[in-house]
Image (cartoon, rainbow, N blue to C red; front, side, top):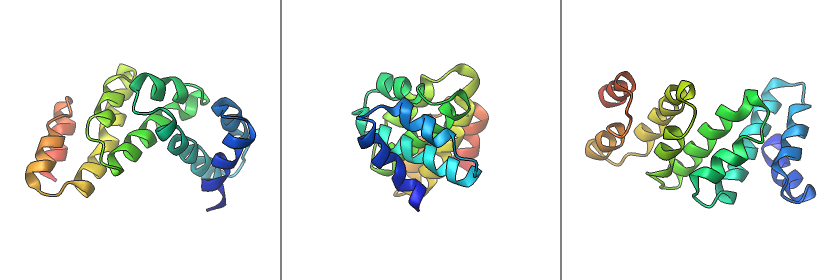
Length: 140
């Protein structure tokens, strides 16, 4: 719980410098704390990007390379959890081609969890352009 709150505090301390916050998270030796810290940075990036895909990508690219994908996925999931149904797919669409599968795959859980009915779920699943992932989303 502590490390899920530290990035917000550090964000204030470092005057909105996500790169400095990421540097502090990256110093953690406990992998669970480190993962929580980077997820919390992404959740701070989510509102800071103001719904702009280019800003999400720019800010997530301030993370160390090993954490960029996790950042994009966390922002996508955060947006989906507050009702955003377009930005998560745009984020995945605009990630590097080799990273798109993991991005879309991470949306399947929130699609299933937040869809109000089968029609809404199918509508969201059909936004996934990767056939095997789309099929997985539709059939489970």
